[in-house]
Image (tube, rainbow, N blue to C red; front, side, top):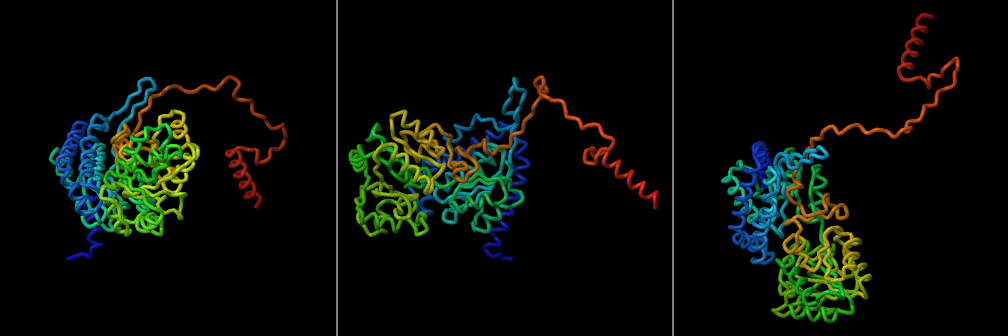
Length: 495
């Protein structure tokens, strides 16, 4: 019998989840050595196939750069493995002999992995690695425009894991992704947790599914350039971050906020490195093709080159242009390019001083990036400290490309393609998601003694005055019950 696409997807989801549940029942009995051997196999397979998967992702989705997606896949394989390989995730993972508390790691179960079109293969390798490191199994729901490359990435890591001893079905992927299929996956009775990376609507759906979820919000990342910055290095880092994979990482720079006293010099440094500044008329044309009336980014330009965007907008730009830069006077609907742009377009603001820069950055974050990330190019520690203490974000990236620093490639943050935004950004986690977020921790605690009250802490109770009759309300519950029974007996005797 041939099923309609939606029914076929629903059946496929159920089959994949049931297989993952069976696999997890076996995987949860594995030792740390067995788990680590599986993770090494995943890392080696991801590294070996990094360029193959990068080519598939670019060809299928039409987004990003082949070379940068090769790096992403390598990062999600080798770099991630090196970071987590010595992490304890099985059995007793902590002993405090002084406080007499033990911590024991347990898996959460079967995970639903929601994969974005911007980072399809790297996110799949990353999520599979951290899932199996913690003895969980995972079923992926790919974006429809990157379904084939996501499925191939899942197949590659699954086969490598099974060859290393993992049970069949430990990593699954929907081959015919639909909205109904994703909803079925997230709400399936055997799914224990959702690991969601994608648009705001999808993340909200994950949190509304009734299951524990780790989701991330949007990143409208400002890059503030202070007068103390090395301007040549700041310009290079900003363009490096923004152009990496054509701006598809959610931590990529979206706006430059520069102090007026160094703006002219910064502009020249940006131009030297391929920053193409738009005229007012060109800005209006680019705004119309980059940002939709709903203020969301136009999916047709996500991860595209400046030349592609210019052609859509009907303007001419040099072949050497790496980024289109639009000078703006404000933030909000009147200035569409002040919103998040997952492509090679930057907004540019001039402020009087770092105090005004602070306010402008907050305005941009409040527009759509609270909790995510902010870059600051500065050598004045007092100013850096003010930004660190007062900005409503959880990743303050100092003198580094935001896109690469945010995921932990150019900083010592945990390597991750799921960047939590905390409660400020509607997320349940405020750091880079890793294996520790996919563990249940049970604790064994020994008797440590009974706390003693200070002398004289307990005051004498006030007693009722002696009286021949005591009101029922002053009696305790047992006395009340006895009084009611006696009253009923007396009443029955008088009849």
